Image 1: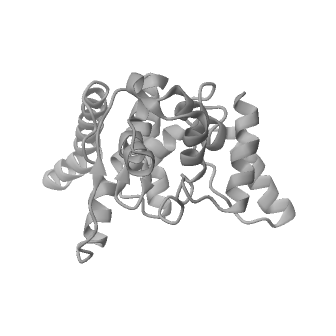
Image 2: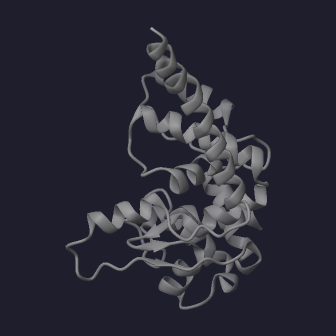
Length: 222
């Protein structure tokens, strides 16, 4: 009986507390240390292990080495309330839920930049309910322990921006042959528009719909 209680205590008390302590330590470390490699990068490398031409491109740069136009563009396209919420856009979540229940519309993604950062840095990006809970946990931690600028910095350095292309510096060099801090407003918006589907989109070859959206966003940014 005592052994059973001991194992129960370890399983439901000690192990969760240990996990929480280690996760806090990891997030604190990554508040200052560049994120060089992510689970998603590993996943893509495994998926493309038989593709000879596949190459992972990623160069970490600080936020002040990335064009401010790109940060503005991703806020406009991905999460307009980024600087106001604490990780979750509850208003958008409620709207999505009400539309689904009352109008029968499909459930759509409404992940914030914070959630996307947590997903990219701490998970393999699988589409499961458990992943959503896991992602939410890390979202709370980074919102608690990182500044908004740090979240944006990590996001712009690890987000997938094309096949094997991760982060603003790699994308700028791949598509425009320049450094991330030299991206023009139009180039930044073109990259941001492709983020929802980076494996099938190319900032230099926008579809008519993407071009129209790009022009509208440029007007907003002005």
